[in-house]
Amino acid sequence: MADVDDPPVRAGVELPRLPATGPLYRRALRGALPGGGRRATSLPAVELTVPGVRVDRAHLADYDRVCGFPLTERLPVTYPHVLGFPLALRLMTAPEFPFPLIGLVHVANRITTRRPVLATDELAFTAYAEHLRPHDRGRQLDVVLVASVAGAEVWRGVSTYLSRERGDGARRDPQDRPATSAATAQWRVGTRVGTDYARVSGDHNPIHTSRLGARLFGFARPIAHGMWSKARCLAALENRLPDAGTVEVAFKLPVALPATVGFSADRVDAGWNFALHDTRTGRPHLTGSTHKEGAPINA
Image (cartoon, rainbow, N blue to C red; front, side):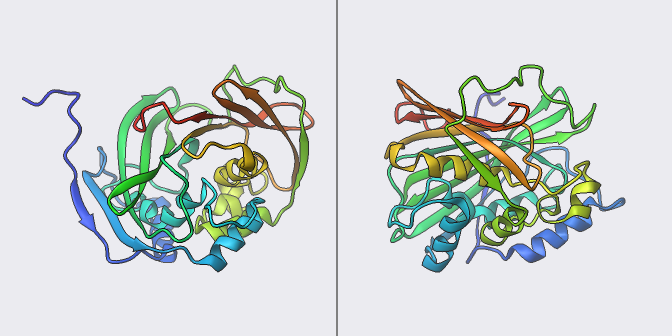
């Protein structure tokens, strides 16, 4: 019998190109309807790969504008997530995926870079799911997206999702308290952020783009994408991020659009601790940290 700590065996499936997101979201919406089909009880034992992905500079410029990054040859650390997102979406809308995509809650994201990724790099992306596990409000899993150049891994993103199955989905953890650091900046987040980021990211989940879609999932107004919030915070730290390291965030209170949010950042030995919070209540929308290279890439 194999040791329980052995990594799972996954079948490799190479696609000729990144899939279009429109048909995948239509599949996701059908799967969210009553009677949308039986779900698998385990994670799909597959790794999806797409080689030869190039950066569209017009798209990169649009992403930089929406998220607040300067336009340079060095890609924002969050941009490969957007570039490879269609592959992760293909994985998460497959019949073998255990949860409907619509309704999953993105609760955390960790990105590790080995070196700066450049606009001239030709990337190969791989996506797979791992670590299906219980949570006090349902079950969690990680969707892993890896970018490689000439066979060497340069970027890895791990997105943690929660499938809510028990309790009140709006309940917050008791440790969620006002941010301890005073805001160093305040940002007005307009109503267009949801649709603008959906356009550049390919993430057209209706909770971000539609008042009706948001209400169907318990939100009074559309909410900002968590990865937009992370990107906007990192844009504020752009010149102070290491060439190789890890940046991780936990997504807390959603940013209901429109909103005014406060950003704070504190220098620590290993990098930065930062937060995005509600300017009225002080409760966090996001907490995060950066670390120089040193932690294992699969930590």
